[in-house]
Image 1 (cartoon, one colour):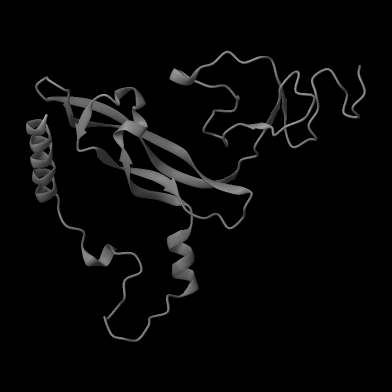
Image 2 (tube, rainbow, N blue to C red):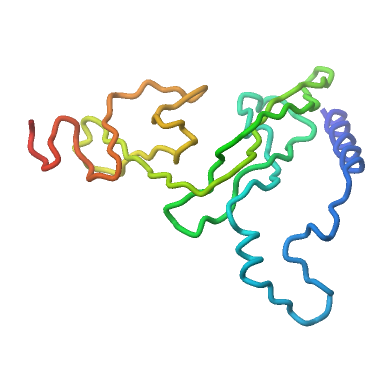
Length: 195
């Protein structure tokens, strides 16, 4: 196992040496001319840099492929464009409106096996917008309207229907989706009286 770690470390150093350095112009909010005077960054520039857009972000491979936790990858994270930023309104969220798939070649290291190259596909955000993403509460039968509601993730992450997908699929009891209305128990009218 120490030989495998040494090999992985060697590959990461080799990959780091092969990557170009980031030019100083791309450093966020640089100090400017290097003098002792504090430079004030104008509002328009601050707003422009913080507004909702796709920015490069390092994403851990295991977070994108949770079924691969028993393997090691080199590199262990990849650079992807992801939506991030402020929207100027707490009811708006920066979300992707256009994505593309990008396939990357990585080194997959299995314990006791020879490392091999694999191709993994990742979702890359192309265009982002600030959109309303109302959270919806789920009133579960038998809860009598008590307790904290379950929250669906914001749109469009769950595609318009509140259902778990993929490896997280779970059989749920029936429920009523309530969108920005008072919490009601299934089978009751809005005033709390039985039908």
